[in-house]
Image (tube, rainbow, N blue to C red; front, side, top):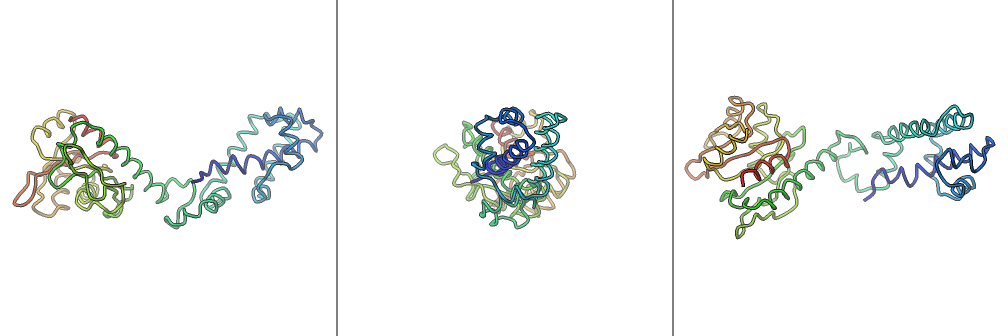
Length: 299
């Protein structure tokens, strides 16, 4: 595992320091002067100036890096620029180089070839990339699951069919865009048991309810199913949740859609069962942690 920030520290920083140290020395600054300007030791200046520090040729050859080094050297040598101003300009360039498809992003992808196993459109520091979205969802689910596992009494809220905590990516279209617990969460001797790490496309039923709610205007992104109990519904209502009933004996999409359209702010959906259908309550929220906290407050 290697973060792009490590590339900045290990390759970009030594390279630009080396370039600056060499240019400043050529402008007549002493090692002491250069050390003060760059905020490093004199021995470090000597190593940079003499090429004793490994640098990255691709970074050094980049036109923007060279132009920045020249501009910073002029300003620092003449006293027209402070070290803080120089730092700000370097920071700005670093952020540009980390942009999707740019130099640092490309170097990072080359350093971590496994990234190619994910969405081909993935680029480092792209906040909208499929990889970043899916990993955020999985991380949120892990935190939510820890909350539920550590919540004393959660096992008694697990219905006979098992429970599942699910969450979806922002542009979720089908169950493959919803992550959940493979095999569901079950009550094993009074303890909630999570059989595996969150995965996408493993929870068809709870995912279907979540997606139906979203398609009909709800802004929720996570859900969990628990046992149906009028007492629990009353407590959820007292805690500020909007409740809506739907009929699970018919078409789920249409039933949930009608419930959401009738109660747009609903964060609790429930159905009272039918022939061969266990009554279930679904608690919805903005993310997995929020949903898990709502359940913990019931215990």
